[in-house]
Length: 230
Image 1 (cartoon, rainbow, N blue to C red):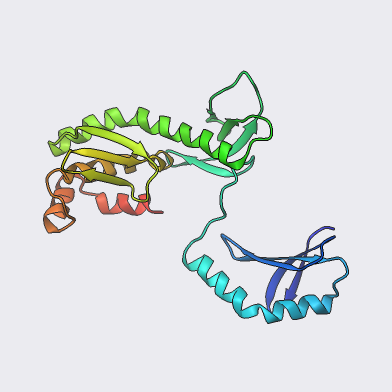
Image 2: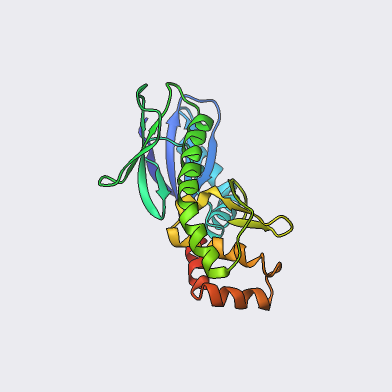
């Protein structure tokens, strides 16, 4: 049946009746939408009582989602919004044996993702992750050259991988590691992170001396940091 909107206890519910045995309640990011799947035989009164009994839990869940800006998990399917160098693109899956690589239509703002038939979320995620890795690796050399000249330090190696932080510097062996998700951000963010990590070759911690280095080599670093963490 077609989902319908109902109001219960000042809560807007998206109700869908299905041929199922039990009732299911979900509060979904990013806006805290409330969705209920109910068996065909359940009465409106039973649904109302069910929502009333879970109202406190619903409000707590909505607060958690909104305060922490929780997003829906990506499923890497057509229509999703993905980002490349700070620009939003619509993802479009294609099945074509001749096309092996992700490609971009700048005019239509579309990322075309070639996938095998019956591909899993994990397979699609790997394809686009490899694409981001390649994009970042291509962007690094000119940015590294520019930033090394600014800071006056050169790393022994720059690596790319998935990580919690945007960057990391092992000052002992001068290895810098960058988060591959930097390929999703405005290009200025890559430059900021590179300067940040190069400054760690001079000053290990994030104290006053380090911040003075950032002020010297990247005067607007605080504004860029906000852009990076949006």
